[in-house]
Length: 184
Image (cartoon, rainbow, N blue to C red):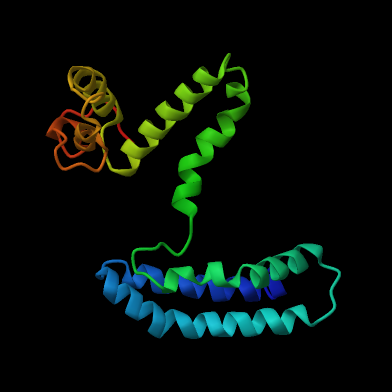
């Protein structure tokens, strides 16, 4: 609600995301430097606001819980300052695992531990392919066609070339080709 303590805290966070949007195209080292220069003061103001707000008695349980969470997780919430490769939030990861979390009830009916393991392996392959901008259908087709013919049992290192980030994957597995059968 505008004017509330929650809105005040959110304003600090919005400023951090604004900085992230402005620096997103820089190199990782430049992002780190910009975060230290521009985001650090915003975070310092946020932590002062957290301490001041937590000292005021309130009946708002959600605000109290949010303030306590922030204080308890401070060192983790600031981790993104240390390395320009780290995202400011885990929204992308959470969005990726949402289908898994939603489907877990259905997967309770996997008849065996092997079935559950197979579900986990397939889910990991699909989400890793998506995260690496691969055509999921073509990537899985490639894996299922090529890996059985490789000597991976005697030479497990050959599996490296099949990983979703491998530069050795054929172009048909990448989403930037003209024949997309399965989009993100």
